[in-house]
Image 1 (cartoon, rainbow, N blue to C red):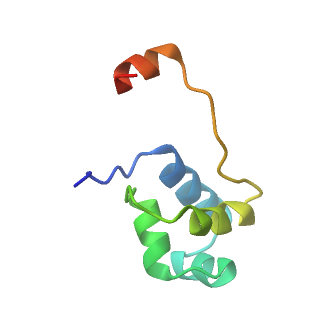
Image 2: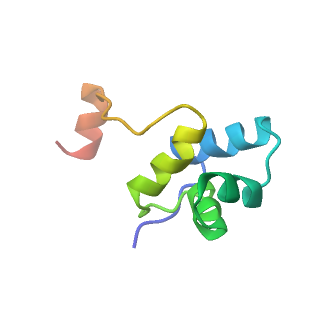
Length: 80
């Protein structure tokens, strides 16, 4: 089972944007139409979350999940 990474880029982005918007996790869940548990797990870095729900939250902040090129060094670290 993968460990949760509270400091991953998406968790940090959502947590920081939510706080800058002066929203609680409950308010963000209500506005975006996802459950409070999902918001909490996303901000805590749960590794296996549904991308459509992540996008519901990211769209609220004007962003979306997209494929992003990674560096050659990152590929080597991933064993590719």
